[in-house]
Length: 238
Image (cartoon, rainbow, N blue to C red):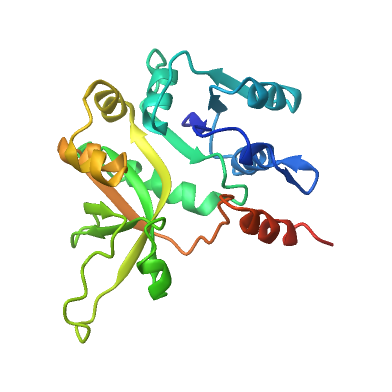
């Protein structure tokens, strides 16, 4: 089995919001464990509030020793001295995570016999122009083999000719990393593309890492706003 690292990299506020009687972070932890894909699941955090809540609910926690600007750095610190090959990161605000999307990113490595792939992640087709133009919705362009060419907050590709048939894809922030790629990220400095777009996945591309994207129809609810939380509550109503 492959150990998963469940990451909580942002301020604890939204992750401690009540979702049908339990904090969002506990709902996400339980959903990840429920997939039964992993031998162990950890919450990686720098929040003592989250640490206490996870321990109270029987979960495992790794406390960060340093301040980090992104999830990859936080997880890299946590696994630096662990004997693991593949590390999976589920965002802390995804309480509806299911087995299928996680299985898809793991399958990428099972089929990569030459070990050419550094990361696996997910994409989903976008058809709503409001989402395509929304800078909070990260878009990804891949080559014909499904490898990431670029991630952006802008619409990519730019629709210069609206009559051209083109698909747009949203990047879903579920990652499976080779530990070696994760540790390279940790040790390498940020470059201009990552600094400009504020997207950590661009650091991997800038240093030549191969990211394989798998298409999914998974429609979770990431808890970013009060509206997201209200929508999520509806799923738990009798």
